[in-house]
Length: 215
Image 1 (cartoon, rainbow, N blue to C red):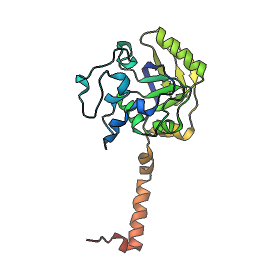
Image 2: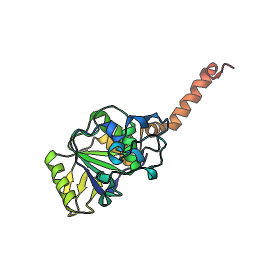
Image 3: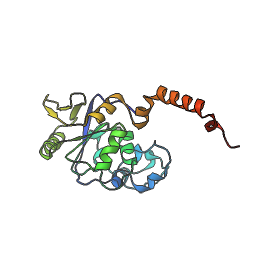
């Protein structure tokens, strides 16, 4: 998992409340058994005018010119600004996969659905909760200024606006530790790889029959 320390990026505004995971990555794309390739289908039903199916060439599809991510001023955005209860609905982990694989590193909203919120941290995304009035102010500023960027400093736990103003945010210490070091659940376990190997060697030395295989 990619570590997160300081990230500066263009902000895209998703000005809708209660964006659910089926809108983030529609159900027909969940058939894949791989964890890659979901970025082109992020917000698929809003992003394209034609119906999307797995395996389609994104370049051959009809983009919706009115959708925020298709507007030239927001191309290349890596910070997503959203309204309350973002990521509600089903618990599909494909939703943060699609968001991360599109190119977003941080999400900002007044609230997130619990399971989605947890899944973000496990996949290298930083979901930031701010007060509703702070988020509303950010929406106003993003709409007013083309090329609006934010700097997300996880170590200091602040968002830095273009004028230098800082907004503090909270993050649970263990989640912060994992993001700063790029540890997902597997990475956390592999920190103890030598101890695991030593335990397995000792176990097989004292109980060698455990190594027998049925042919």
